[in-house]
Amino acid sequence: MGFNSNGVLFQIPAEQRLNVFALVIYIPDPLGRFLDDLRKDLVPGCNPHAHVSVLPPRPLTVDWQLASEQVRQYASGRPPFDVTLGAVRMFPVTNVVYIELAKGADEFFQMHDAMNSGALQFAEPFVYHPHVTLAQEIPPGSVAEVYARAKKMWDQYTGPRTFRAERTAFVQNTLKNCWIDLAEAEFGAVTV
Image (tube, rainbow, N blue to C red; front, side, top):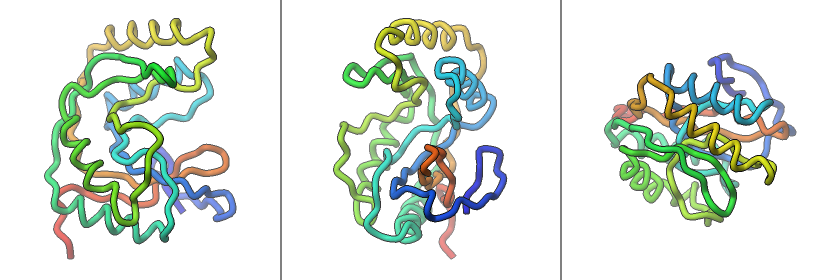
């Protein structure tokens, strides 16, 4: 069971789920909607839900509910914070086009360091770098054009570039590369 990007509850059979989980903070509208539209323009056919990853994708060696409880306990003691998006950049090895964080990156680094432990510990293949992905797996001949288009569209955007990080979403990937929401944890929530 999970929630799609419209908040509708649906069932994904266990045999279609992968042992790949992540912890993300979704970006609310109108900024989130703009970023989703931008990503769909840059990567036709993708199904985005704008976010910043706290914990990039990883397998679990325990039941996901145990890992989710670790997230909930940590989040309950952490206050919400503001995040401001900065410039469009590109990771040199993978050619992933992304938006860097101009404000809030320190909080993401702290959360990542604290949460990459216990049930959620994983030796990640890349150094953690909080960001908003705009395009990935770009055909080699299109990288420069996609990067230039992303930069131009972001530079022309006149809406808000700041959002309040108030909750995390614990998500799981499926065979169709569709991420489903399993649980949310609010920052500063009182444990009952």
